[in-house]
Length: 367
Image (cartoon, rainbow, N blue to C red; front, side):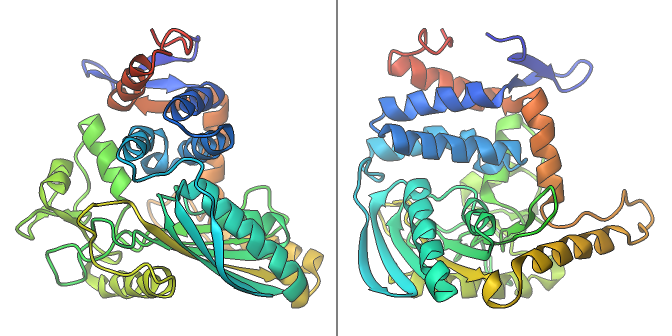
């Protein structure tokens, strides 16, 4: 056990609830577990890096807490390691991609790379992806476009997977969390980045709260009878997440519906629930070459100036000030890279159990 892989305390007289683990060590553990489960080195690296990067940015809901679930999906045959994606339909600026139930991280990264290459020639390009597993933190893919001097956009739907979000005014789930992410190139140190669910919160955050034995805020969840609840365990007993917007939740509900149009209907994935409960993410992604509209250097400078203009807003009462989109996640990443990532004990024990099952616990220093 490394010096930073220590138990952290919830406060005086409270149970020890999580460990602090360095990002590199966490990545190597997850790569080894995924390879033991049948993933190739490239697939394992893509998934493990994607999960740990989510933890670094503070999106623990999309972090290594998901690794045991992915491995369970491999065992069930719902994720197919080594699956070869295929282009079903293509034009100079578009593509329709069948992931053949491969790892969403791996399939979607390749799809966005293809979209970027098309946008270099056609200035604007888009693709749809269907039949793939969970894609992880959605921001990963628009950030690829921003690094190439483009505005990147991505939306995702769980397609035929079990639904988790109730439409506004309803008490049964009909949507997934249906996230939207947009990344913009700039001269800022941190990315100028939107990454949001169209639900009040990502389902994984409820899982994290349950794993940590914590209550959740009001407005996140209703129980199976449609009553507001702060107990995350109600999520696993037939409850449903609420749409973004609180009393104005019709806005989040409307956004979620449009994401399903792009990611479930335009892809041909379909809507409703497959009885097999297979994780079947559909994605719509686009890249816009900034240089086709104006000089990239000027644009990047003005985005940075715009961010600073937002930050110069006098803070409201009780506020610590204004942050531009993407700034908080970047600050968390710097802090967690330096000091380590908090991993709740339940998740850590789950990784331990997998290492023991695969006979690699001693090799990974987890014995």
